[in-house]
Every structure is written in structure tokens, then in C-alpha cells.
Length: 180
Image (cartoon, rainbow, N blue to C red):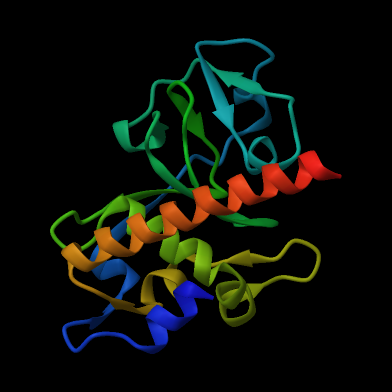
């Protein structure tokens, strides 16, 4: 794949960094049952809402600012289902099994971090995953995970090329679907 080739043929100006050196992973709140309401001021984003569940809980709690996710924020589901997402809806508060990812923009773009997390998620599950019935990735082990990081200028080029490839793939899939 394009990304595999990029990471295997990295430039000399790429550096090894730990995840904790390029972004903050902020856990959501571990809610008590009585805090999850059928109606309220804020929707509570849970992992299931990202993948399978249309049922939402609500809360009237007022929390620290980093316990809210707003449109455009990068998040990472780390329990049962895995992977990054860019939140595209209104402001919500979020459950403990989701990290809000706050990049250090001097080192990494949010878009490149998304691509990196998406590319690496199966390796992360194998290397860092624990648990038998509900596999999860610990925050501490994720923060210590080492990655190869290109300079910002190259990060932007990589993301742009991937966006172009994704658009071309979607066009080809649409043509193929019409012919079937």
C-alpha cells in the first residue's frame, strides 16, 4: 500500500517520537448510571455510538473543557472497537473509552495523526491490546508507542496524496457499481 511504502522508505529528516511527545490523549468521563439520562443538555458519546448503536444517553453535567468533543476534533476509540475518527457533529461530552486527541501542532498535523492512527490500528491492537472479552488498549502503553514522524511539510503532502487516492477509489467504485 501507499502508506506501507512511505513508512518503509522514510526520508532522512524523519524522526522517531513517542505518541506522548506529539499529542495528548484525554480520557472522557467514567459515568455512573444515575448520570446517564434519557434526555438532557448534552449527548454522551460512547464507543457504540461510533460503530453500531443509535441509542444516545444524555447528561446535564458541566465538565472541564477537555471533556467535550466538538466538530472537527480528532478522537480515538480504544475499547472493544478501535480507531480514530474526526467528529463531525455538534458538541458532546464523551465516555471514558474514548480519547480526545490534542495534537502538538508544531510537530504534527491532526490530519496526519488521523492517517497514522488509522494505518497503525491493527498493529496497535496486536501489540498493546489486553483483555479477553473486551479488548482494550491502555493509555500508558499507547502514549509510549514509538512512531516515525516526517516533517510537517511532508505530512501535508502525504495526506494530500492519500485524499487524492481516496477520491479516485470512490470514483472507480461508483463506476463499477453502476455497471453491475
